[in-house]
Amino acid sequence: MDVLALYGLLVLTTLPPLVPNSALLVTAGVLASRGELFLPMILLTVAGSALLGDLLMYLAARRFGGPVRAWMRRNPRRRALLEWTSGRIQRYGLPFVIAIRFLPSGRIAGALASGVLRYPLRKYALGAGIAEATWATYSVGLGYLGSATTGRPLHAAFIGFGVSCAVAAVGAAVQWAARRRALRDPSEGAGEGEGGGPGGGGGEEPGGRASSVTAT
Image 1 (cartoon, one colour):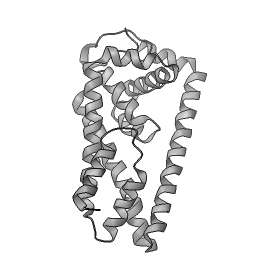
Image 2 (cartoon, rainbow, N blue to C red; image 1 turned 180 degrees about the vertical axis):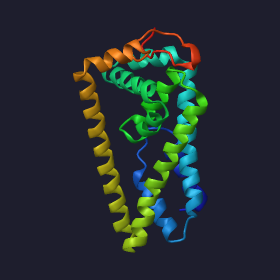
Image 3 (cartoon, helix red, strand yellow; image 1 turned 90 degrees about the vertical axis):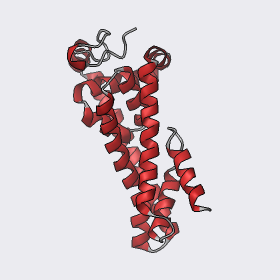
């Protein structure tokens, strides 16, 4: 495959959410370890296109907060995910904006919740940038280090894909446990509602505090 075409494919599979590209990223790392691709350029392409996709989702949700909120609330699972995410963004701020990228559906939920809540653009861009740089380094690095260690590209690809699946499973378990704990702890939900969380009132508060995601 032509080198420029591969970089273009990396952009096309990384910029939009929910496009499976773990195998492609691991393969790019393998090719970089063999000197066929330039590793820093791969990382810049992957992290940059992912960040651009995050910012586009954030800006769309910020601009069209009402329709986005209504769409999310039509499905109980989407509504629960949005409310859970928005409450933790308001409670933990930047660290959670970074961390949620590594949870299942976290990239979409984090961007939409941040946009609907009107979380400050600079803080969101910083958090998303850190998260995407970490994700790109981890994803491509699996193939790069695996190939350099084993000397067998095919083995490296299988190892990288297996590790990616294992990390995704751990993230899903963590998210499930956290949501279960939130449901069992009514005081936590009440605190979020009173403090402008998912159950609170609308409107942006003094000091730039985000408005509630469930406000209509």
